[in-house]
Image (cartoon, rainbow, N blue to C red; front, side):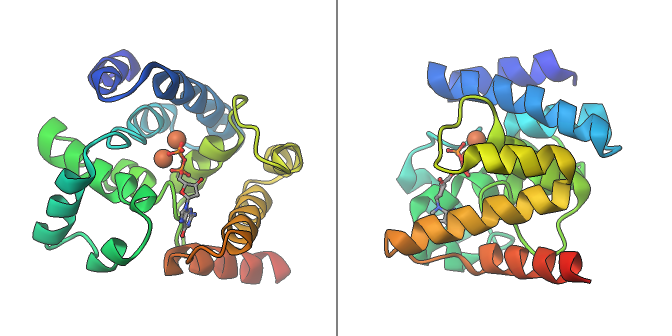
Length: 189
Ligand code: DGI
Ligand code: FE
Ligand code: FE
């Protein structure tokens, strides 16, 4: 499967704006991948598929999470925005036959992050945050750190997201804290 096949598969799952976001994530992820010695083909597929489940019906995602033993049940206690990564990885593996665990993990953890992310996971996580269409407060500073250092960039994005969620009095999924703690320990040593 090449990038065009992946984009053709994902397109009918998405609204136009989300498809355009996806194309920008692919582009940004490929640039980050080049800087960080990550395989371009894996990057293209992971980035193309990362939001495949974004508009799948909530009830359907809920059923998948409840019934699929591999999916963590605690997701159901958190915001449904967090479901599309793990469910997306499940769909990609089971419906489209992708079994590259690095690609699946990059899709699975693209929203929350997690401790000990692999380099491809970091690339997709950060590309999703900094693609040129993003207008989050503080995104330019994250862009600057991202192009200097992938780990600094990820930590910066995680810090902003944690701050944002806290300011909205929203719960924070443990993997997000663990991703932040892991990168902070690593960068402080
Ligand atoms: O799917 P996208 O809009 O491209 O981006 P995403 O997958 O990062 O988006 C999901 C949103 O989920 C993000 O803007 C913040 C929100 N969110 C809610 N709870 C959490 C969370 N994000 C993280 N990292 N951790 C949470 O616990
Ligand atoms: Fe997403
Ligand atoms: Fe996205």
